[in-house]
Image: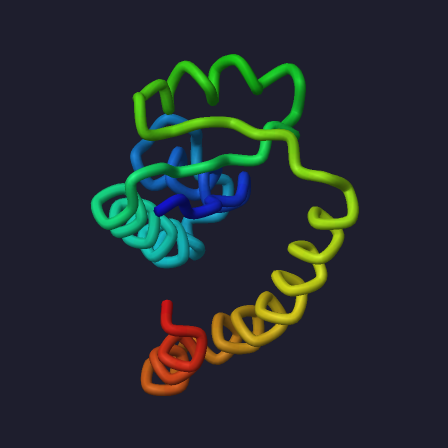
Length: 117
């Protein structure tokens, strides 16, 4: 089974592992959530597919870092890409609201349970 891992998640994984500096330390918890999701996907799926649409100047570095037989990069048709962005945008509103309410860790946990993250 293959699973799609978006480039934002890969960027968060790179920050969580220290490959890329974290510009906003308050987001470290979010980076660790992304790392957990990535590890889960890597362990539980046969193939990880990353859209091959990352910034050209950093694309080779990203591909080198993720070089593994079970990781591939693929062109995503623009219509599909728009659909994925629309879905992710809907979820990000919920995650942003949860992050803003981070003082109430129960609320933050509740939002992640809603999206099974």
